[in-house]
Structures are given as C-alpha cells and as structure tokens.
Image (cartoon, rainbow over all chains, first blue to last red; front, side):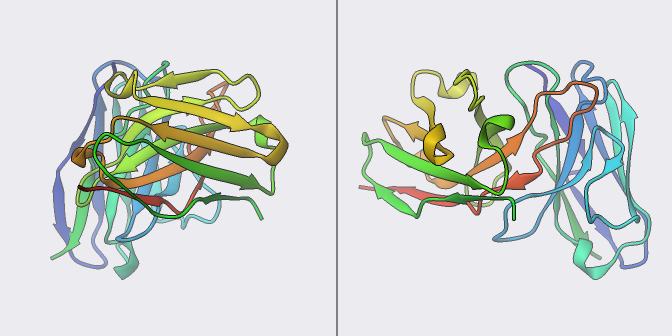
Length: 108
Length: 122
C-alpha cells in the first residue's frame, strides 16, 4: 500500500503570503496525484489533477508540481477564502487510492 | 449539470447494516468509476473502495474487506455502498466521487456527492 505523508500538519499564514504544502509518497506514483481543498461542512473540491494541472475554475494562484514521490501545492498569494484543509490523493496502483492525512491552512 | 446525489442521513444500531445510494446525472454513468470515501468528525478523508459501473468490478481497502459491498444499477445510474456489522467507529460522513483510471493523465475525483451522515448508536 502506498502511504502519502503531508507536511506540515498545520500551516499558519496571513492573507497575501505564499503557502507551500508538501506531499510525499512511500513509493513512486508517477504523476498520478491530485490535490483537494475542503472547507467545514462541505465535500472536497478538486484543485489539481495529474500533479500539476489546475481543475476547471481553479484560480491561477494555485499551482502543483512534482512527480515520483515528492509533490508540492503552492498558493502564491493567500486569499481569505483559501484557509481550509488540503489533501493529496494518489491513484497509481490498485487498490487502494490513498489520501494523505491533510494539511490545515489557518489564518495567523 | 453533472452531479452525484446521495441518499439521506441514517441512524443505525451496532451490528446492523447501512446501504447508501449515489445517483449520477448529467454524464454517462458507465464512463467513470465511483469511489466511496468517508470522514469521521474532525478526521481526514479515508478511501473505502472503488467500483467500475460498466463492468461491475470492485476494489476495497483492506480495512473494509468482508464488510463492504459496492454495487450499481445502470438502468437508473445509481451506485450503492453497503457496510455491514456496523460499530460506533463507523459513524462518519460517507461520500461518493467519480474518477477514471489513469491513462496518460490522472484527472482526479472531479465530482463529489453531497455526503451522507451515518450515525451508529445504541
């Protein structure tokens, strides 16, 4: 089973700052990694697919990079609505299609 | 529009079973896989399993093997997740979400249901 480890668990930043979130896989997942944003009481929303491609309607301040085992989600300049929990998820082998444990992005 | 609509909240006693439905609309049901993901209060997302609605093939997380069954009715574009031998730790919000197996790209779980709250309590 592939384990995804996200860091940090919590990230405290101010609006306008740059956020860098990490996701590390226990073995290669190629580029088959997605990022999701979840706000309280809502279903997750797809942000990034295939490691580096923004999903439909996602603002350009969100970007993803990486391949193999190391991946990064970057938010270039935080807006108030970006404070949420972020998850990475892989589907490179079958099964399971694991999620990371999440990074909570909170207002400093 | 493309959407997945889940059945309503459930309250079950320990040892019982629950069956949650997920009705697809706005796209060809058999063209996308359906995943089931759950989230206990204050916890992260936990992938439970996957079903290909075209073939009926399934794959379950080892944790749920023997307790979960995923099925579908293609005539009404609906997927089902049944979890048996419920215990208090199964209290969670259960989501369905569609995706496709990677070919050149992995497009992620791009459409999610609204979630179904399952409460297990005596």
